[in-house]
Image (cartoon, rainbow, N blue to C red; front, side):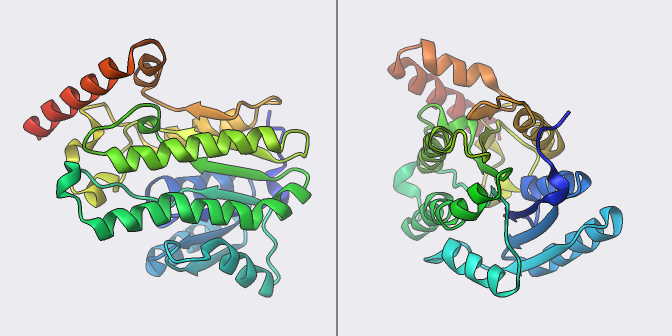
Amino acid sequence: MTTIDYRNQTIVVTGASSGLGAEFARQLAARGSNLVLVARRADRLETLAEELTRTHGVAVTVIARDLGLPDAGRSLRAELESRGIHATGLVNNAGFGTHNAFPDEDPDRLQDMIALNVGALVDLSRAFIGPLTAAGNGVLINVASLLGFQPTPYLGVYGATKAFVLNFTEALWEETRGTGLHVLAVSPGAIETEFYDAAGSQSADYGAKRVTPHEVVRIALKTLDRRSSPPSVITNGRPIAMASKFLPRRQVVRFMGATQRRAMRGA
């Protein structure tokens, strides 16, 4: 049984046009939450909003914008409040990765990734932390990654951004304990999403078995429902994260590099 009354929530979901973001929206709407869907692709957001309103009878607001721009969180909160919309929850899902040897990476693309995966997530969290805490039963979910638990050759910058998200979110979990705000970092392994198309390689999953977005979100919300929920959860691929705790870092990074090179050769 959930400890969160989702029927009295208005939850902002970023990166909601596909993949995990769209699935978070579907499962939250099924629990009765009103939603604000944010991404760049307005047509996809509108289609999803119509589906959720028709199926679940919830109120859905669509905001088409690039969150990689400066002041993403503050400007979004200002726009919502100008419309009379006051968020009680936030799912920071927007992000992307690139898959290359570091010298072959596009510097502009790397800057865009850091701006979205780290900068926007921090600005959004800071912009909304006040009203989310004041709500007394609010929700803050930040999507990290299994690749944030260890060095990730050929996905080095992406993995580092997700290590930031993991540590940042766990710190917020401790800072907000006792306020009624439910904070969770979600660390998925390989998922069946458009991530690999955006990364430019289907071998960016390190050859791991992919699970569905439905399963990842189901585990995330089930974890958040616990009366004493942890600061983070790994939804799939746990042995990789556990290996980084028990093996020397040199051994871990060499294993990850060898695994990725095999996957790249087989792609």
